[in-house]
Length: 380
Image 1 (cartoon, one colour):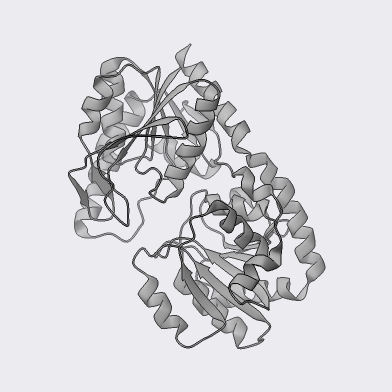
Image 2 (tube, one colour):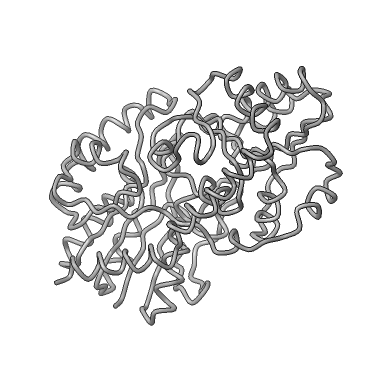
């Protein structure tokens, strides 16, 4: 089968959608399929030159983009010509309401190619400028609604939280539930103390791992850490992730507190796996989450989790089996739950065992097989 994935980003650009596309695509290549990935020649840190490359056996096409509008969308209309001059069995677009979804929909219709779309937990309530709000209005309610209803054959939802949204925008009767997965590297065991020794950590470790932006709540993590440190000193807090506009604010809030460290981004997958396994607790104080890959990575690594009870998280994580759910912004309750786990080793060990078991459900090999079966069903 000849497959085209249309993604808003791809390696080395960092993001959950691009990572999910790479995991699917490389497994499809291993099964003997010809797989192409189209992504804009752009990421959040630097502009990636346009052109073609081969990564993990995947034909990667970096399409020149015209501009990026506010914090909402990247315009790369050259995608249409790229798709129009090729013949694919399946076009699989990723991320609802962005311009490439509309372009892929039109190209698939022109070529009479089956179009699969994974929405990746769209949301319209992020803080945006007036221009961004207008973009949301036009894209969600006009262009993308039309495409979802008339130009998409099958819609993949990565969490049941999306079902009502997809049905509202015209996808009723087309939905297949296939979650994201977790890389097998996170199931491997590493020596916990290696990571802690590298960064000079001797105490219990509470971890934040994610992009430093408003959505992920790194500033909330700092406030939670300070509440806990006002009550005890036998714990360190680590903030790891690339800056997306909030690092300066995070550092300002940390101030001179030596028990809270901000390290920046870690890219190496083995080092990330070691990071999770070194942590006693993983914290997600997010304002909003769809189905974060980090949730499953932490589970596979055996981390007890304390997370915001937002969007897709409560569908995949149960309390108290996998950790604790707390309303966003209730930092005193976050601190209380973290302290409860720090004080109870048996509870941490029980949750760790539960999380390792649950994470096996999200194995990428099985998810790739379900995705291929969806392709087959659509092309019958």
